Length: 156
Image (tube, rainbow, N blue to C red):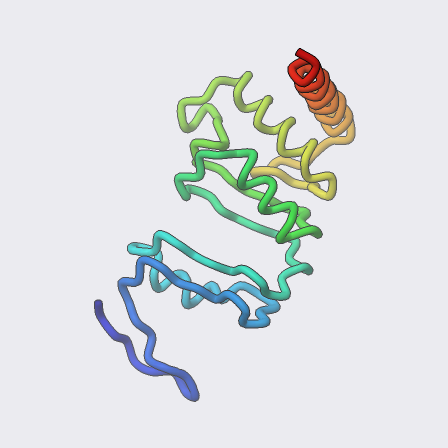
């Protein structure tokens, strides 16, 4: 692990970290400069319990994100005012550029739009009202089917 120069009034920056926590720091914005210094080795970034409710733009491109429902749920909980989200080049965000089909891309898009009502732009493409309506209907129906399936299993 390498150490960089200390910042005025702050500790020296340590390079080569695998885990970096900013939890419980009262942050109003994400400390991008510090995070980017660790980008080659960083595996875990914790921004829990901060004051990021006003965050409206989140870019998490090319991060090996593979579980779409979990990441979307986290985004909804931690960033309730999100308007612009970019998750390009992640396994959870299939597209032509990473081996996904058009059907997979459209399904991904509809799912994210249905779960994050405040979203205006997803992966550099504006969310259209017609697209939002289709997404709502598609995933509302899926939730209804899953709910009735669970009820049937309970009555067996």
